Image 1 (cartoon, rainbow, N blue to C red):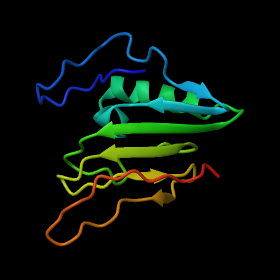
Image 2: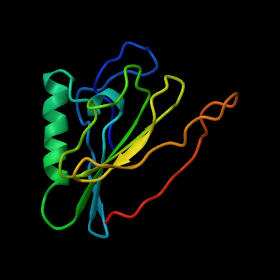
Image 3: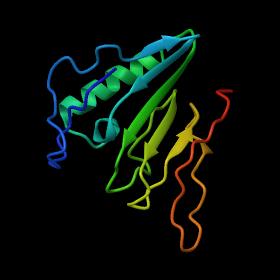
Length: 134
């Protein structure tokens, strides 16, 4: 669907500069589902990352259905205010090691789903939560 372009210097992957969004977003039953990987979705990325992010967000907001931005990532510095998709849903799936929670926000930016708080001595749970797009 897409590739990561931002370089976080972890050496876990090689960032791509071309052909980043081969099928991004996809449309299914009137829902446009787009993806940006980790830092590519953050509002504080460099100019090329921001141009790509803004172009995808514009496609997600096109008339005729809901837009959903999916963001898998491992955010070292948190996601609060850094990952947004104004006018579209935003679903962030991240590991809990950095005490950064996954969430789903509706098109108005209201958090609709957040992770279950960790249990004492057990840490964060791996879980999948669902909610209606309405």
